[in-house]
Length: 588
Image (cartoon, rainbow, N blue to C red; front, side, top):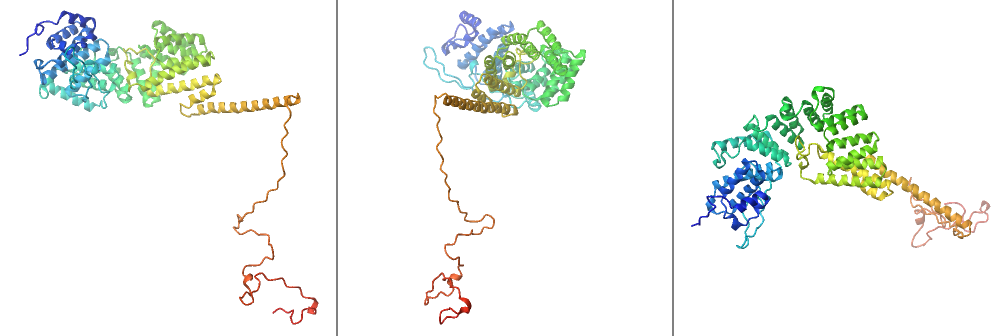
């Protein structure tokens, strides 16, 4: 029989409470022997109390400690469905606490672990490392359900976020809460929890999973969560859809946001800017221009968000080419609130206006606010190459832009979109709409770096850089320019060499070297065996009389053994008077 402990019905030891309050991450550092001394209900009560007081750090530590305690305790804490329900509740609480601390990655892992156990997400085995017990030998590997916070892996984004799947999950949640199926999770998952999951998945770079959770929540509670309106949820769905490239779905949700834009702290101008982004992704450039013109020409549709104000200014600049007006508007905007995106746009316009010193100041301040932006480093490289004509510094800036672009391209799918929406940490930073823009930025950085090497007189490095990008007309022109210049240099050096040799010979420094006299050789012409036209044998020089082959056999017998080549007949004398006797001159 198990011995009773003083802390089973009482409080946690004071040292444990103080340790978790000071350093919540140390809650997972206790040994298994010490964890067996704790009571799961007591630790859970402390965690719930901290959450009620909005002390998210201690609450996170207590929830993690409760999960560890539940994993190592014996049968006294219950097994089967009761233990599974408690584990789900603790994981959901840990996700809420991590989300309150601003750690969206930890929140998404805890939420995903809970949803896997409920059967709503696909299960994935978690890898748990060994941990030694203090004074009790080495610990074994726990099973897949006994996960601690650092082993949570959400398994990546969802593959399917369709309306049909969202409706299936919503029906399953309704049946679970009514007790028809899987009564162990009755009342655990509701619309408010799904809304919180959607927010965490969006901040953690899981747009499909965020969209799926928000769709389920809207089906369960169409009016939206208690702390947020339904328009805000529609905005989250639109941003998530746009993040993974579903512009049509994003357009549908943005049109729903347009009906009550003020509930999402937006103006109709902000929504028009988002509609223009969707139209551009869909290739509808006429619709994009119509949406942006509505923002630029109608004072009722002025945007409220700084990022959309900047977008409107840059679009107006592309239409009327008025750099002075754009500079004035961007300077006023940066005086109101200095952002990396605003300073970057100001630097671009100043570079177009050839005010290089002011552009340098704006881009440097933008780099301080957003040092990991390939766009900022790309403009700095362009400024120092074409403005200040300092190719060495420009090459370093282009190299930095190239490295950062590669980092973004190698990141997990859509993770660079995390917190890029309204109210996120990256709202006012320079960002890309999709991966195509990242690839274009890398290509520009590689081309600019090659131009710098060409200016520095290092054509080999320039050619190596240009080999990394597709062979376009611009690249071919650059390569041909280097090849032509190399030919000109070779010719120039050869002329200088000949001139130097001639001067040395004329001054007596070098003796002229005469070329050896060439012998006149009359090579024997090659005989053509066949004529190319008639394919007949060519005429040969006859050594004797040319006789056809059939005439060689005339009069030939074994008896007379005449010669194969008949001898020439002597000409007859006049009238045959001098012929030999006995021979007639008449032809037989």
